[in-house]
Image (cartoon, rainbow, N blue to C red):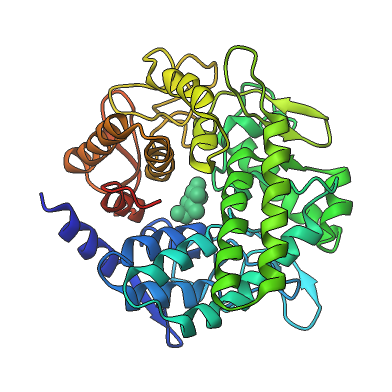
Length: 413
Ligand code: GLC
C-alpha cells in the first residue's frame, strides 16, 4: 500500500468548499463539519505535499472566532441533510447569546491550541510566505489573549478547560470525577453531563471564571503542554514579524507555564504529570496516554525521560500489540472494545508520543511505534480508532487522522 497516496486520496475525498472557504472533514459520514485541532492536523499533513491547501485549511479554521477572540472547536459551515447535530452552544453575532446553532454558526467551546504549530509547519514547508504569517497571526494573537485573560484562574500561567471536549478526548476517564460520574456509567450519561456544561456556560454568559468556580475547571495536561509549545512558537512568529514586545511577552509566558507544569510533576520514583481539578483541588490520577506528553513538551531531563520511557515500553501498561492504548491496560477503566477514548488507539496520541520520543533521542522506539501505527492502517484502513490487541478498526470510517503517519518519518518536531 502506498500510504502517501492513500492519504492524499482520503484528504481530497474529505475536502469541501463553502463560500470560497476550503476545509477538510475528519470523516464525511460521522463528522461532517470542521473541527479545530483536526484542521491543524490536516494542515500539517497537507503541508507535506500541498502547501496551498494547507494554507486554505488554516484560513478556514481561523475564519470564525467568537467576539471574545476564542476560536471555536467546530465551524459548522453548513448542515448536511439528515445529520443529528449535538448542540455545543453557539454565539450569535451582535452580542446576543443563545444555545441554538445555525448554518453559519460555530460551537461555544474550544480545543487544544495547535494552530500556531500548524502555521509554523506550513510556513516552513516551502516558501516562508511572510504574508501568510501576517494574515493568520492576528487571529492567533487574539485567541491566545483570550486564553491568557480568561482561562488562567490562579495567575500561574496554566489554563483550565471548561468541558472535557476541549481536551479533544471527549469521554476520557480522567474527567469522570470532575463530571461527578460514578466509575460505572453509560456513554450517554457521559455525553449528557458534557452537554449540560455547555448550557451552564451559556447561563454564565460565557464568563469562564464565574463558570469555573461553579461547574468544571480542569488544568488538563495535554492541553497545557500543547499551549506551552504554542506560546514558544507564537514568540518565534512574533520575532519573524519584528514584533519584539510580543516576542518577549510570549517567551516570558512560556517560561511561567513551563515552571508551573514542572511544579505539578510528581517524582516519587516514577515520573507522573496528572491533570488537576481546580474545583475539587485534587489531581486526577488516571493513567492515560497523557502521561507521555511531558516528552512532547520537552519538560523533562534525560533521566526523568528514561523513567517515563520505561513505563511506555512496559507491556503491562501501554506497550500492547498495537501501541499506544489511550488508557493503561491495567486500569479499571480500560475498555478497548467499546471505550472511545477509554482504551482504543488513536492516531494523534501516537503522533504526539512519536514526536516526544524523537525529541529525547529514542529513535529506535519512535521508529517501532511509527511502523506499528502504519501497520494499523494497512491492516484496517483509515479508521477513527483501533483495538490495541487485535488492530481491528473501530469508529468512523475514512477518518483523516491516519494521515499523521506521513509525519511520523523524520525528526521534524
Ligand atoms: C471526536 C474526537 C475529537 C475530534 C472530533 C472530530 O469527537 O474525540 O477529538 O476533534 O471527533 O474528529
